[in-house]
Length: 540
Ligand SMILES: [Zn+2]
Image (cartoon, rainbow, N blue to C red; front, side, top):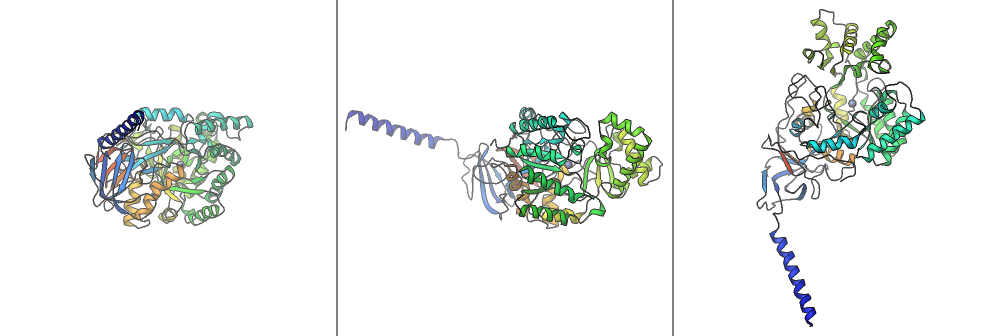
C-alpha cells in the first residue's frame, strides 16, 4: 500500500468517524412527542394506537412507544389524535368591527375547535391582490395557517364595477389577467358568489372563461351558487357546468336548501352531483352543520337588480314609488318562501353598525318594539328602512335538519364554516355561532349524539378530504413527512357551546393543538404561540 493510499484510507476513516459522531451527537430525534393517543389519521381509516413524534415543523414518526428522550411530551391517553382541521370557506377578510386574521391573529375561535388552516376570500370576495394579502398574513404571524382564493366578485368589481351587464371582450381579458395574477401569487382557485352583487350580473359563459384560467394553474372553483331556494337545482347544474366546461374541479359551497317549500330537494341536488361524478366531472360539496345561514340583510333579501350601480344608485332607485313597490314585493316573497323562513321571527339581526342595540333581535321583535303589526309586508318595509340606514348582517333560520343530514352523509361533502367576515370580535354583536362551533359541533352532535357520521369519516371530511381538494399534499393526514398540524381531543366531551342566542362561547373538549410543530393549545389553554404561515397553492 502506497503512502498516498494509506493517507486516503485514514482520511476516509476519519470522515466516517466524524459522520458517525455527528449522528450520535445530534439533537434528540423529536422536539415533541404526543403519546398514547388513538390516531385518526384523516384518511377515513379506523383509529389505531400510536405515538406521534414531531421534529421542527414536520411529523417525523407515527408508531407505538416512541423514545421521547428530552422532547416535550403531551399525553393523549384516552383521546383522539388527528390532523388539524382545514376550513375551506372562511371569511378572514375584514368584518363588522373591521377585524380580520391580520389584525386578530390569535384565532382562538379556530384553535379551540382544532382548526389549523383556513382558506379565505370565498363567495367571490376578498382582495384581488392575493400576494399582498398573503404577505400581510405572514407579517401578522397568525396562530393558524391562512390561504386564499381569488374572488370573481372582487375581480368583476375591479374591472366592471357594479354594472348589471355582461363584460365586454376587453373587460373579460382584464379579468382573466387578474385571475392569472392571483393564481400566480398562490390562490387555491376561483371563488364565485353568483348570488351576490356584482357576481350575480355575470353570465355563466364569463365565469367559465375565468374558471379556465384558474384551472390552467391547477386551481379549483368554489361557488356560493346563484340561488339556493326555488331554483337550487338550476344552480347546482350551473356549478357543475363551470367545472365541466372550465376544466377544473368544482365545489358547491355551504350546500343547503333554503325555504320550506324547497326542503327535500337535496335528494335531487345530490343526485346531480353523483351523475356529474359518474361522467367524470370532479364536483364536490362543503357544508356547515347549522339550520340557519347568515349574510348581510341587503345581500340576503334585496333583489340583485335593485343593487345595480352601487349604493347611491340603489338608494335613488328606492325613492321611485314603482321601483320601491317591486323591491318590497320581492323582499316579501323572500321572507315568505326563501331565506326569511316564512316568518319575520326567522330573520334575526346579527350586527348593525348604526344601531348596535338591534343585534340579536328578529324582524318580528323590532316590529313589536316599534308598535307595528308583525306581518310579512311590514317586515319587508323594515328591511328597506334598515338598508337605507346602512344595513345589518343577519341570520336566517330556513334550513331543514333532514336536508342537512342528507348532505352531510354524502361521501363528497366536506365540512367548512363559512364563518362571518373577520374573526369574531369576542363578545360583540350576535353573529352566527359557526365561527366558534362548526368543527366541534360535527364531532359532538353529528358523530357522538346523532351518529350521522363515524368519527373517522368526520375527521376525513375536516382534514384529509379538504387537503386533497386544495392540492395541499403536505397537510390533512397524520403521516411522517407531513407538516405537523395536529389536534388532540376527547371524543366523549368535544362539543360546540356557541348558540344562536349566545354565540361568543368557545368549543370544549379539544385539549391540544399543534400548528407547524408549535404548540398553540395545551391542557386546553391557549399558549400564545403563533406558528401559522401563509400557504400557497402548490408551494409546498
Ligand atoms: Zn356564501
